[in-house]
Length: 325
Image (cartoon, rainbow, N blue to C red; front, side, top):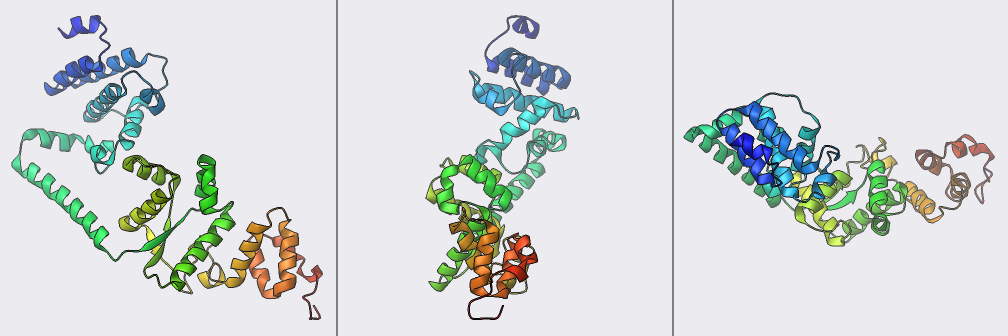
């Protein structure tokens, strides 16, 4: 029957999946993998690129995903190395809604020992699975019941560049460049602290994690509420640090300098503000102007921002008004 069905070249993914899973059930794993692969070849075509985008634009995306995931499961049981279709399965799984995806990777979900135990009907295995899920729910509730931390999102330089490349409109919310962004984060937290807000923190964001969050929640990345919800979610999950850091601790911005000598230094905050407001003026000339106004202690801040030429030529800079320098 299977051979006759295959000869008819069905265009319904369900037909290929039915036969493949039937073969899998009776232990014919190699034949099952072959049917999954043949179904994908028939439905996608041999020349179609094996990408998530290609699956999304196929006539039956959910059917294709069903075959790709099933093929991954069978090949995992056969201990076969990952190929392009298996990597596609991993990507499709990662982009599933959180409720369908569950914890862990697709390899974890398709672990042969776990699959065999689940199929055995052993009550101890079922009990262990329930206990594991209960522990995960309990941990999540505990995270949400912790004292609420009000977090500002911080995008490290590489992530900041990716963020504005993908969503240029977010420049208004986060700043035009990394220096401007760091300055804004520090100023926001200082303002909240002055207003009496307790439990302040900084949540380090990444574009890939932000994309996954918005995809799972079904919300727009460019919505202001979305960004606030993402910061709260990061705080609930744990990857957030309290602000301000202790004075002798590394600065939150990643400079490797102590906080009190970096973002905790008001002089450096002023330099960042001037740099962000005077983007058309050369950094060296702007640094020279600031040094003339503020004195030699600001040279350290200028060096942090990369104006090494000005620091090297400090003796040639204009004297500070009212001094002999």
